[in-house]
Image (cartoon, rainbow, N blue to C red):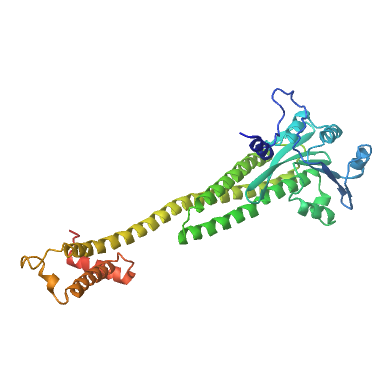
Amino acid sequence: MNGDGEDERSRRRPRAYPPPGSAPGVLSFNPMAQATRVHVFAFGPDHVTELDEVDFDTLGTLRADNDVVWINVDGLRDIDLVAKLGKAFNLHNLALEDAVSTRHRPKAEDYKDSLFVVLRMGALGERIETEQMSLFVGEGFVLTLQEKPGDGFEPVRQRIRDPRSRLRSNGADYLAYALIDAVVDAFFPLLEEMGEQLEDLEIDIMEHPQHEHVPAIHRLRRDLLIVRRTVWPMRELLNGLLRDEHPIIGRTTQVFLRDCYDHVIQLMDNVDTNREILGGLIDLHLSAVNNRMNEIMKVLTVIATIFIPLSFVASLYGMNFDPHVSPWNMPELDWYFGYPAALLLMASMAGGMLIYFRRKGWLGGTRHEVRRSRTSEERKDPDGA
């Protein structure tokens, strides 16, 4: 492989894992990671503060003066900042390593002072793309780390700014639920868009089957597989949060997590439904292509069948036996209207065959005509013999 191919592959598949043999809990720097940006929400029932940086000297005071502190980190290039945040919130090194190694399946791990949750957020462009979102929740704080800027958390931010919002009067566990719920609900418009693409593709295949539909079907199949591999572990994750008792998650929040679990079940149903539709599209495409080929072959067969007797007549009168040598040698050659008679004979044969084929329904006759022909045949031979 040439150098350009290797560069393209490295851009497409950046290294997002520690080198083999690395010590556990060591944060490894990923050169392909995006620049780090930080946004901080600190709020209580009657106030909210937004910051664009973390001041570790005043972080303790910020946590003491607010009920909940939410620190969102976009981009994981600044490993030192992630390490400082882990130290400030007393996070386990193994959890931090998983947070910066962005190839984990959704999961939840309970540490003594914090709960670590890994989710994958989806976005639909030319293809489905997912990115890892790591969430730490503890007493009075939520820390989220994302691979790149851009997420579906803006409605959550707007709710925090609203003094009447439930988020302002609940703890960090409820904020963590709201973020998890936003990640889960973001898959509904993706599946809806994919469902519309499936419907459009189904109509195109039924009306005009083309070879270009095959790559589109495989692309949708791959996207649905990505969504399924992303959503399925979320069900296990939420089921574990509901089944096991976590001191960080209150009973009130568990009720809302149960609703989030129901959303994941709905997503799985939608994914399975779309997969069944997609499997049917493959069969539909093959059937449509075969039917189209059969129609073409039928037309070609009819044309060939019509020209067989015409070719016989033409070849018969093309033998040119001299009628003056013997009266049995094609006396039609001396007829005054011999040539028009031969053409009229061939035209009559072709027309008669066309009428016969159409009455049999072999040339796209109307349903009434085809049904009438079948009924007459059944009357002639009711036993089908």
